[in-house]
Image (cartoon, rainbow, N blue to C red; front, top):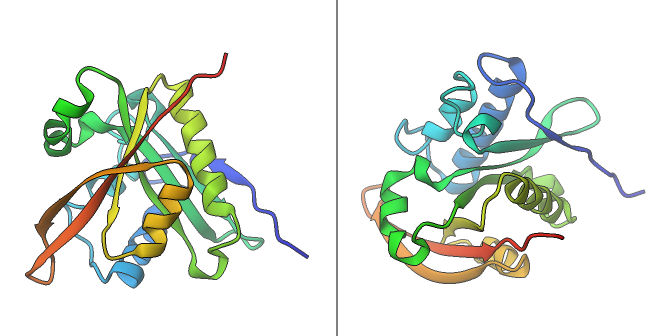
Length: 190
């Protein structure tokens, strides 16, 4: 029998157990899948999950949202979030010529426990994040993905995101890593 999972909004930020669980889950996936340990510069958005709603990247009052999925015993097994691209000044400046004054969100931290990948849950999370983005008034959803993860790149293309560029940055291992830029126009329902 196929398991169905409920996708929930992260309802409590700050030092709530739910926010801490979400942060811990994301950092574990980043470490296990990408081999990247915690870095305060790269994970400031995740740190904001356990901060105040006023400063939280994913708080609705700041134009964000964060979704979690729990298994039957209450463990977080999937996440996904969105925040205003202005939260990342370097990325926002790099893409200013592309977007101008349009309202852009960044989709981030769409992570699934390896045991449940490939079963449609990631697509469901993204659909809910896109609905959240539309409700918040965003015109375009932007994201980037590691160029060395073909399954991830294929996933985003299958969800209607189009690749438009690549950028490189220093790797934690001392070399350079490359990410792929994707975006999608968020059509408004009438």
